[in-house]
Length: 150
Image (cartoon, rainbow, N blue to C red):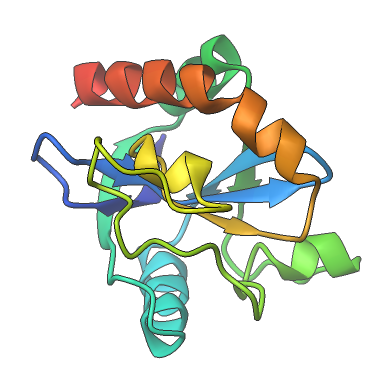
């Protein structure tokens, strides 16, 4: 089954995948419907986030990739209706995003944007900054594995 993910700078050395930080866990959204993914990308752009491209990938490969990287893959089916505040983030990004002004610059690390500088662009739900800093090496490995998939 094909799912749709949001990628930044797809096909380049600075490629990154959109993720959410929820309760100390990195979550990658796997959209069943490409229109839902396009809508989510548009909502990010409206928040002055860089516009991601919607890329189709095999669900099994993405779930395996996320599991190996220690991240959670969340499948968002067509017509999904959220049942909790957390699930609301699966269809609409949070109001507050991480600073991604230099997410693709490997030599700098802006405050509070560890994931972004590692090539994994994410939004932040306000979780502890210590967990984001500790995950920097894991995120770099995640980025490398994602590039290997493409």
